[in-house]
Length: 558
Image (cartoon, rainbow, N blue to C red; front, top):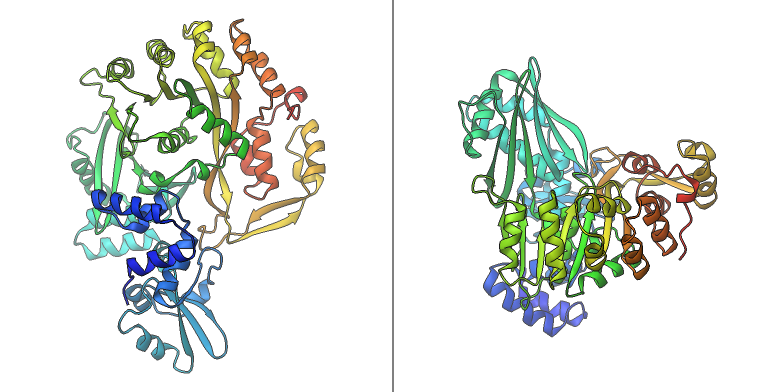
């Protein structure tokens, strides 16, 4: 029984999940973009994945099994042999004395029921439906360690380098790693993944096989094979079946050989929206209000890897419309956005941020995104672009929101120009979320807050009575964390803030005024996420420093 799109749409309409207008827009979109209607409905956030799963299961005439809320135990999963489970994409979801319930993304696949009856001869078999991506995640339970698979590939002596790279990228995508590191040591090469911002060892390759792996990466990334003592940067596209992923490659010589870092530009980031970032309702309203203005500057600050680009891409997705001209200049262009003109910085042709931005201004843009304001020239052009009727979005390296203004003033931006153009400054950090599947709560005690300054520990010990942690499970790779969320610090440029900017203020003066107008610091925003069970206190302390000055904590007037 195949999924009937017409029947699915009828169910979605009948249950008021979507409107006739949604269907009309979806049909127009899929004709020109060659995608499934369900992909459109999800990407535009017209329906959620759970609602889609329920509608699909109804169209197939079976119940919906939500593998996110009810994750089967490893013991139950392994009761179905790996070969059968992967062939039919089937998972043992629940069982009792008389019945077993299995879930799959194709409940009527030919031969499935008879095979299951052979394994469970005295049981009645019931079928359920689960989303394909959830089935994929559960299938990872059967995967042997990367190192074990490397050994098997090496013993086969067939396609050693290609197969090692394929297995490694498949695992990285499965665990949603952002980077893969190859780190040569004396006798082995350590492979590490950066998952949710933290590096973890994935496996090891005997050093005698590394040269072939390295050379294959160089060929695919169009880098020089005969260069071993200089840094090289390139890019490649990995294609395996239906999976396509663009990868940035960086190679540098170290004492024990050449180290490779591969940045995976995975498709799942494209689906991010403002709602996925972890913004409070108040901050999301501030951001959307600033983005609706016809001109001005919105700056996102933070260190490398703090999610600045993801925030700007999510904002572009919100404000990009057919009637506006949106142009970006980036280094590099990481994700292609439909309907947006994206320019890649190119040092070889002397296309810098500043020169590209000068050209963009002559292209009749409404909205401009500058990947990063790095120098005085770019800052000056950006401010002038915002002053002359353009909405300009950019990232900026600063430790916090309040530091941004003094740094821009030091770069030579005139105070009156900055006061006239700045609309919003956002500082952010990324922290790991506790895994939903293995989260548990414990009663908080004073010792849990001993790492905090006294003025903070005394306050939050009264407000936070339960702390949450992750036990570690198959879903999160036994880390206790799965996915990331962001903490934010917003400074809105009010009339009073404009007047303060004209006086060349210090960051402390800026932050004091911002707090009096309702701004909340990174650490305080993070404490709310600790209180709500989204993350741990240790994880918050890893990415954000508590304010040492009592006057900088808990003084916000709402």
